[in-house]
Image (tube, rainbow, N blue to C red; front, side, top):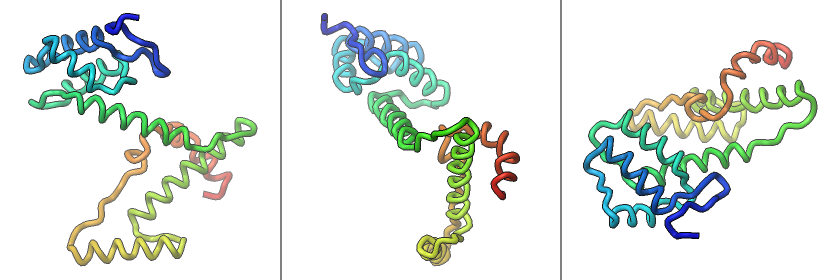
Length: 181
């Protein structure tokens, strides 16, 4: 196989020289500061995570320039977003595999998501039923009072964006009532 051709990887086709050259040409349409010389293409090819696919990288570039102000995109942007994407996917792989009937699976999924909501709410209110956690949360409150800083309020939907919150909202009344919430 020619070193300038793509190789197939688990997640798609890994980018090689020709793919990076095409990606940089697309990026150059958004930002003239990004070079597309053979030296630049070679440097990007060597620095990009080898698992990144052209389709994914193209979408990242589009999203970046749709939201970004006057910053130029870099190899680090792609590598950091790829790492973040893989971390999120590995967190989802770490969730339990629910078993049983569809109703049993849905109830287990509902319980997991309800637990996430309760955990985030405990952090926000600095109150927990668990005595060990309550002590830690109390120390957090004391620190923020002494430092005269407000305690950051977190949203479970922002912290866990990959979970299916519309599904949870749709079934919450039914399962919540059946399970005593």
